[in-house]
Length: 109
Image 1 (cartoon, one colour):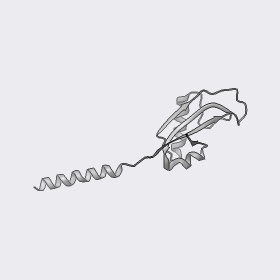
Image 2 (tube, one colour):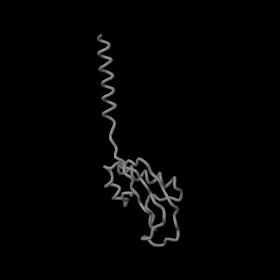
Image 3 (cartoon, one colour):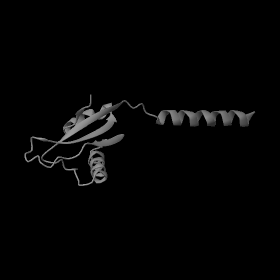
């Protein structure tokens, strides 16, 4: 009987521990439209750009859930205020939206 009570308490403790570690995430897609003056994370290859962007965000405590890069860069853009055609889409938790605004991202939609 004692073993059953101990096993039940142990399983209940493990279940509580797993449940308390889980966090509800409210994902939001944020988008950044690249301009002629490239952002600091931009590289020639998309996979390097993705890694750079993730590193920049993580350095500030932002946890990107997913990152997508869409479009092709139009190199005819000679000024900083024209768009190159490339966009960066980052999915983050809703609580981190204000940090993404700091980097120039807006809510996708």
